[in-house]
Image (cartoon, rainbow, N blue to C red; front, side, top):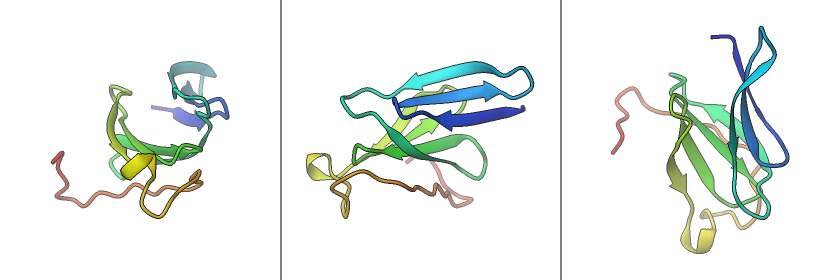
Amino acid sequence: RNILVSLRAGGEIQHWHLTSGKILDTIQEPGLDPQLNCIDFSPDGLKFAVVGNVPELKIFDEHSKKMVYSLKGEGCVIPGHSSRTFCVCLLFTSDASDE
């Protein structure tokens, strides 16, 4: 497909077509501090996860570009996190389902 996905400090997730250099899609993260720091794709390429300055992990469907999961703890804090996140690794087992 020749696609590159990038994150911008203003909270944008952008899908680029490498051959033409054109932006295919932009997802804008809402909020007062939407900066995104890391992205990772599932091994099958069907989902991607992003983390940033808000203590929340979001998982998106690659085809629809819609958020399908939001992981955060009580009071918008991921257990073990009370501030921004710099790294994420998205793994699914071969028998994973949308439960």
